[in-house]
Amino acid sequence: MSPRILITGATDGLGRGLARKLAAQGATLILHGRDGAKGEELLRELGGRHTFEQADFGSLAQIRDLTERILAGHDRLDALVNNAGMGVELARQESADGYELTFQVDYLSTYLLSILLTPLLARSAPARIVNVTSAGQAPLDFDNVMLERGWDGVQAYCQAKLAQITFTFAHAELLRPTGVTVNALHPASYMPTKIVTHLFTVQSTLEEGVDNTARLITGPSLSEVTGAYFNRAQPGRAHAQAYDAKARVRLLELSEHLTNVAFPGSEHLNGLG
Image 1 (spheres, rainbow, N blue to C red):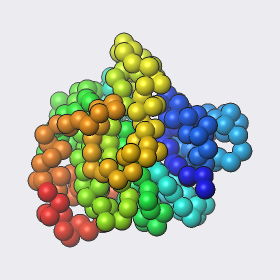
Image 2: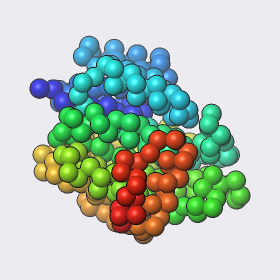
Image 3: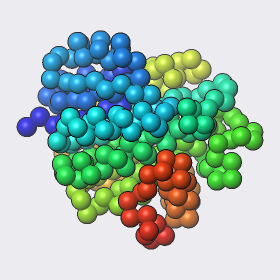
């Protein structure tokens, strides 16, 4: 049976490369993107068995609508690849929900999508969640998460990526009994993608990042690995805050508050560490 895989941010860069590789391996893909024209173009390139869903990660309402469409249209989901995101920006922006845009696009919408799809993934187990993060990580100041004071584009990006890794560890622990694995990775450094090339010099090939990510999605040797952070193809060590139990609880409580969607088992949050 062809594995069914949702890739967010599938119309450009790493996501598009992943879509090509996984489709060639026989997967049936649910492709997400913000640009409908790019989505339709990718569908034409890949062929008929795949589907495209449009949503802007800068809107939590659109993430809820996206989830409802996926749940209505699919009775199984073998893997969720949380790849959608934005890079280092030059000016502070706010989302449709009034939150700092990088934090919402790179973390908060991923939190919401992952929690809302958790029941479907659990019913489909064994299943995998792969969170595409970064080696660029910075701790969150929980009194200034939206960076209303002293906004900096690098800090905004790096703290959102660390939040995603911290959430990965908590989600993996929650889902450990279900047969759903949850891992995060830094796929490669400074790949030739649009979120890199507008500010930085390319250092890695896209193929390197695609291969490292695909390995976590489909690699047989990693089928039971969960709660891990990978730096490219090797197990890595994230920033210390990701392993801090109190910080993890504060992040999950903040995420619940901002999305109005509870982390399952949140009454036991203090046991997560």
